[in-house]
Structures are given as structure tokens and as C-alpha cells.
Image (cartoon, rainbow, N blue to C red):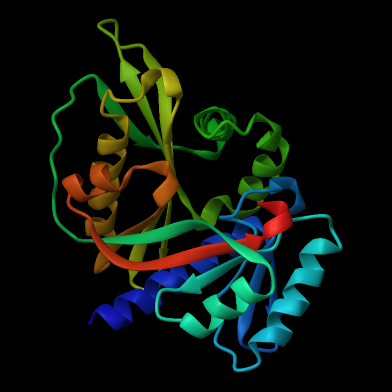
Length: 256
């Protein structure tokens, strides 16, 4: 059961990344995702889903794709792929971080926070979502590219916006998330809150709403990804997520 969920989670994640990047398949056994506008971001720029015997050739081909553009080559390594990990260390790659893929079975969760509301946005509200996303992740320079991506793929995603509502029913947007329903699960991405409003329940309300969407869509699970360096694992586990798998991330040492 977990093997199927893991495979579907990888497919969901790859589909999401392909919406935001250029997807290049190498020798029918590995995937490169790359977007020069998101330089140095190792979620969107990476070599992953490696199922090859000729690992050295794959690494060389992927490295050239990134290096020709002056970008770091990040490689995702499944937790049981010791051979790839040894090869990367041998040829000068350094460990950077770990991506932890978390999964939660579908259930109804009620988080009491009466002053925070979550809504699915329409295309008219896309500029607000983009502004909140870029402020939440400290990527104001991404705004034009995020707008291009979302204008193109708006219908494929469910975009959520969380807001604080005051006593006069005025709403102040403070958080965001993007949902992708593919491969019998709902992937939660771009979960963020503007720094000044963190710790007030926005992320919990966004996750609660995501679970309700999953119930409506009739999928089996909700998944999300978080980097170890971000320090959010405890938060997600407390909410009810369990670890599905881990992927170590390596980069050429001169870029780390």
C-alpha cells in the first residue's frame, strides 16, 4: 500500500514541478526540472526520479544542462540508493538538505480559529495570491515568472488564500497554498504565511481546508513536502502527517 502511495506522491510532485519548470527526460530513466528564473531554488531545479544503471552518464548529462546556464545542479537521492550517493560524493557533490515527503490519510479536521478564513481564489484574485506567495517565501523577484506560470496553469491547480478577518469583517490576506489533484492524491504545495503573521494559525487553517478539498475530490491521501533545514517537521507531525519517504539532496561542492 505504502509503495503505491509513494509512487503516486512522486508522480504528483513531478507533475507539479513540470507546471513551473521545463521538464527534460534523460535517457527515459531520469528527470530534470529547470527554471532559470528560480535560480538556486532546489525544489524547482533538480535532477530526480533516477532509475538508471548508467548513473555516471546521467549525472554528467544533467550537470551540463545546469552548468551551461550557470546554475547549480541539485540531485535528489532516494533513501535506499547508496550507489548513487557514493558516486555523487566521489565526483565532488556535497550534501545540502533532505526533502521529507509526508502523508496524511483523509479525515475531517476542525481547527478552531474564528478570525482566520480560507477561500479558493478566482483568476481575478491571482495578483493577491502571487503577492502573498512571494512575500511568504522571500522571493519578490519571482513575481513576473510566478504570474506567467499561474496564468498558464490556473485551471490545473486549486489556489488557496488565508486571511485574518477583523471585527468589521475586513479581510487581510496573510497566507497561501496550491493544491494539485493527481494520481489519486492531493498534493499540498506553496504553503506559506507572511512572516509578520506566522504562529497565528494560518497554516493549520490552510491544511484543514485542504483536507476538506480532498474529501470532496474523493482521493485517498494528502501529501506535502518539507525540507529538514526549514524545521517544520514537528509542526506537520503534530497536525497528523506521517513520514512517507525521504530524499537526500546533493549539489556540486563549488555551488554549496
